[in-house]
Image (cartoon, rainbow, N blue to C red; front, side):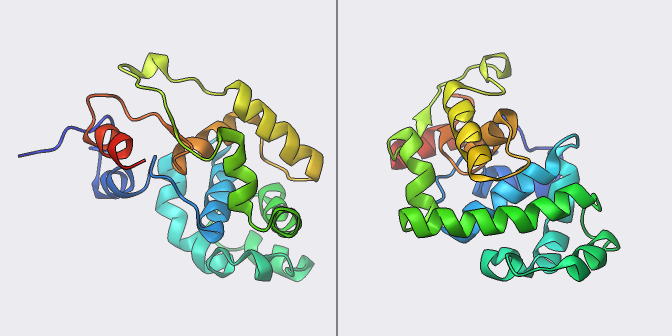
Length: 190
């Protein structure tokens, strides 16, 4: 029996991402860092463009080891601009390095990025119980608040729309439609 999905039937890559990651609460700092970087990289592009380059990003950016990325220098920026496995946008590449440095400062202040970010939703996913994509916002008061705070701390490519997409990706909000098998699964587990 085929499971009903709210999206992701286009190809194996999107199906696997929908079924195994999108909307599932993530609490590992490395995973949270990966998503904040990938969502920023997506700005102006489709998620599929980024998803197809995800392995390229992992290779190019030290498997999203934020400690290593924070030490990247100008020579690394020059190398990455030539890397066809990622989006070769200098501002996005430089923001990844900057964001790794800010990420480390947040971890130092809060003990983990997980503790910092999940406090914005009282440490539990918001289940939006959407029936249609028309009900899904592109940003919310919470994403506005997070975006403002991250920008104040020095992060780049963390506008409210990017942050809302990040919140969806890491399960801070459950925007799977109610008729999707993942919606029920997430609600029952979290």
